[in-house]
Image 1 (cartoon, rainbow, N blue to C red):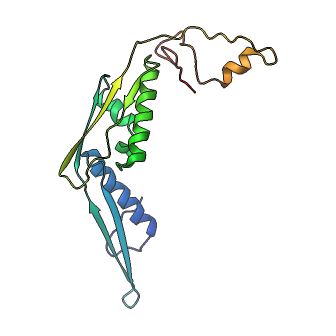
Image 2 (cartoon, rainbow, N blue to C red):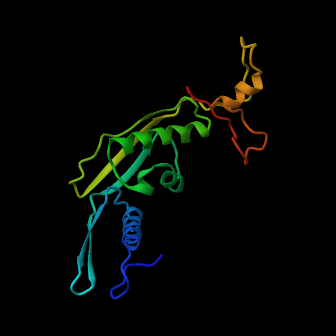
Length: 181
């Protein structure tokens, strides 16, 4: 990708790419609510374009997960605001759902996750605490379907969100997966 360079031909795509790189730098430093905007001002007389990128860093964000051990790498991979930024109600609800899925994939099939409220983004720093009540840890070894004669059970099992544990724990679903879905 070509960055924005003074004296080079202008491309709107370069502005977007530069903004993405800047946002990624902020996200990696835990400014998870950073907001970026740009202004492009053409100067037709001089055949130039002025580009201004404005960054509002927002607060420094600390994310804590209580009740379930999650590595820093898995936390960053699981919680959406580490990739896309933004700390609104939707992002926190999505993080809750993804964290619940993470727990279920580790055998805590009935884990309950409580999300934090939307933080005050005018503060210098904020702390988000997700509480996880993992419950018992299970291994799904068998699925039985009763009372259905019109369809083959294998066809139904393929459509279910529940899956049995794999024989090789390092590949696939080591403990299986299940959910209310």
